[in-house]
Image 1: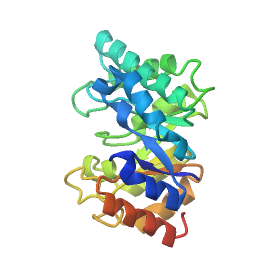
Image 2: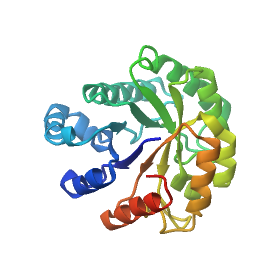
Image 3: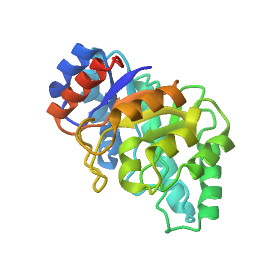
Image 4: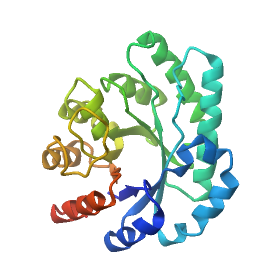
Length: 251
């Protein structure tokens, strides 16, 4: 299992944590459309410090991108942005990239959204899964079932789930245990952060209502192949979260 920290702050503030704990870096900057539109500049910037990181993961673009949309133009733009993110990740020899499912419950006829999503991901992953693992992540998804169906349809070990624990706690009516047991070994990547169950605060692992010790143990039992990425905004809470994982023997 590899542990990453998300690049939610300047690398100069994260560098000592990368070094001290030997963690990887999940690059988030290219999730931003404005960065993608000026990607040569930001690729050069990333190259200045990425050599200090043993292993990288990438978070792909997500704002307003809905792979399951009924509008073919929306799907076309999603494909274009996702491809841009993938190509940047390739430049840095990333092991994996994460994309959101784009599911917003009650805004689409569920069956149609699912069929559109299956077609999108089967097409998008063509020729890419030999180069990099692709994970689809829950955000507003209420249940894991649609994600599971998409993953099973693509049917490739390098296409799997990124289970975001914090998003489950704020956006889903189902328990974290339900999601972990349901997705099971389909989960190959996890986003870890905590909250109070109201807002997606991206707090430290011990700063919220999620029973993190129980959650981590379930992840190890049901999703043993999954890597973990800590998505915490506050640098002090991030440091505390790494220490917490180390004390539990996960680092």
